[in-house]
Image (cartoon, rainbow, N blue to C red; front, side, top):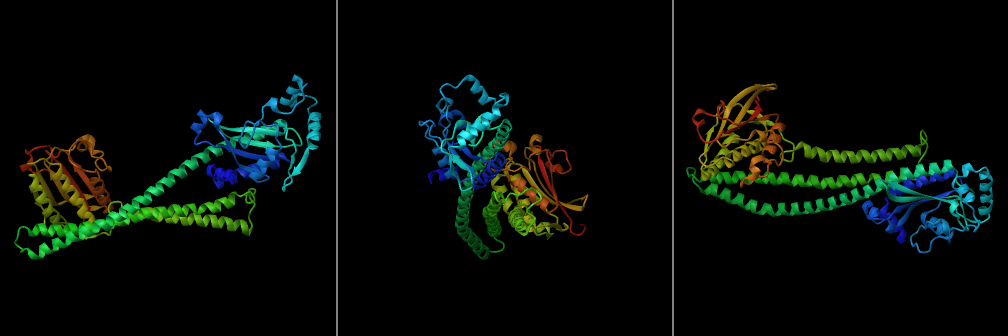
Length: 529
């Protein structure tokens, strides 16, 4: 039982099934033979390279009998093996094997190179007769184990990969010696099995990493759901307080703008929480997809089973077709589940869900944002100006996405502009593009400008450029999210820096402070699309 647990720990059922199939083909070609595959039981190949003498080999597959029976028969038939070796496989030295004391150098050469000895055939026949007399134990599959297994009746080939022994291929045939052609064939099989062993080791490592990833993702999902639940309660309270303030304050009260902003931003936070909840659900679905992919393994095991492998062109009957249909059906179901999760992620790269496009009136989007931004700008000493044209044609977009884009650009302009700088927002500008007429939303500032080396990376996620070395907080996500949303709305963002000397910077601001930066969001007009 312990040996079987060790075998399961270092070899997957799929690998064992594949190896057993290889051994079956090998023994069928060799005739009247038996074979087993041993894998080095070490933590990794680097450890094996430094601790060669401490490596232990564990049997993982054999044919024609089960592993436990094969090991028991092999151990019983090799009493001459080195008793100091405690592993399941004993590799005898030449001096330890039973041999005549007067064996000559000529006989040794004859064993090493039988093709050069004229009497090789008669020697093989004599060996078969001698050892055949000792054969007395037959397996249920017809292979007979001898009472004593002589060294020349077994062939042990190391499985070597990059000068590291990863396993052993042991082949036994008691009725006759091995021919050179047979030896070469066994060595070729050993080479393919060595590559399989290495792939199996990598597979175990990847499975371990995947298991850790699933555990971590599951824990993260649990934490996210808990935080979202706890976040909703204070958010509801803030929204309620804002609504109470709006009702109690007079319309002409200057604080009415603040109270209205609290209500509007609370609504925005609730929407973001809803999107975040959906994004976490996508991560949960990813675990389900991985579970669906693992459902393919039983079908793979059936196809790899020794009785299932058939020559090319065979297996055209109902049973073979049913097996292929089951395997293909499982794969298609898993691919559909994976694609569904991927579509949910890709479809809402900015807000976590696909956008619903409709006609948007820009003043309704921009003015509420400016009302809140003006308070922040005043606190910092930045002059925020607005030129929002009431007759701006409607554009194609999504209300929440468009508000997120404008809010990000205005917040950045105020945040990265020094005290005394000017920030302005303008609508009513237009241009003709490849797809029709576009309306622009201009967000400019008289700050220090953006270095040319940073402009090529502005819309990369987590990129902050020179701001990464400043004391200003940030994640480097705002512009990446803005560009993603604008692209989903079939628009584009234009960046101009330095803005000094360009038509986009008003004349009365040309001499103020820095070089300036202008962002322009271009969106398709509704009536000219």
